[in-house]
Image (cartoon, rainbow, N blue to C red):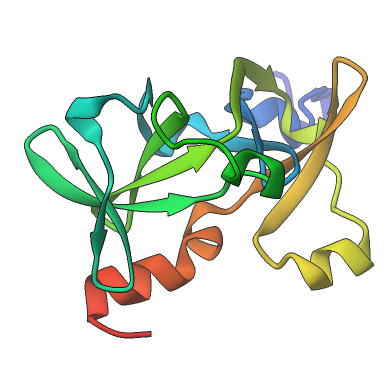
Length: 161
């Protein structure tokens, strides 16, 4: 009869979970990654999605609905026209939000063990950062979309800042 003491488990904490799928983007002047599980679509801003001023922010048409549009392009990217810009549409707190970014990269699969905490000073300045990874020789920062979109969520869902 085998006992539990004879078992030699080799399962690590990160081995208990499937790798996380991330979308790499250029935004806010650096390379970021969003959890692909919360993303709905990736597209180029076309005339059918033309942004309009809506209250204090921007909105765009997406799948027959008006969704808030938040501009996360770098300062240099904001100098250019919005048309043709890259848009990432995410589902956050049961609502759709669109984000303008400078460039959309590829999807990558990352083991949880490869995620490191951001430097404390950076995490203090940017509370929406969940961690960082090394990917193709670059530091990529993982973003908590609820924290990043916090002001837009409060304005859209609760009618005020």
